[in-house]
Amino acid sequence: MKNISNIRQRCPLIVTLTVGLMAVALLGLGSQAYAQQRWGLEFRTNASIPVQKLGGSDLNTGYGFEGTLAYRFMSHLGLYAGWSWNRFGSGQTFAGNNMDFEETGYTVGLQFIHPFSEQSKLKYLIRGGGIYNHIEVENPAGDIISDSGHGLGWQLEAGLAVPLGERWQLMPSVRYRSLARNLTVNETTTAVNLNYLSAGASIVWSFGK
Image (cartoon, rainbow, N blue to C red; front, side, top):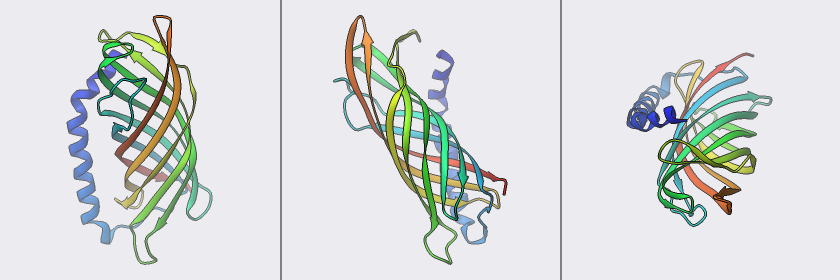
């Protein structure tokens, strides 16, 4: 996964574009209409802050992205499912020095999106669901030296839904995610808990009826 490391250099650009889109959305809030389509295709970028050590090792602030498909089966309630990738660097770890920890896998759950008032076009978002992810340890050469295998975890999320047009929305949100796995390095197994807060923004395209 060496080519993924190029994402490091793009992070400042992603943040700049996200902030710009949020500014445009807020300026045009009064004149935009929400899409009425039932399906939504979403792409999210985020920065992530660990809230505890991973197997006794301090993690740096991470970054990642996610693709999600959602289906609204009631007026404000829907299902979502997606795939995400997150990366955390660390200087000194139980696995060695200057290691990267990558969390990838699947998520599924329920989402509730509702206007703040009858007149408001601005909506709030609440999500909750499970994840089925694994953690890989990557050395400075880009080689994977350990893989936890997939396991179950959970996440909670809250944010806003801001209209960008009839079919487009911007959804800034804050998420908490928790995943417990085991990592084996040099025949030594370490129990790890990856718990972190993630702040990001999604671009959503709505379609279908």
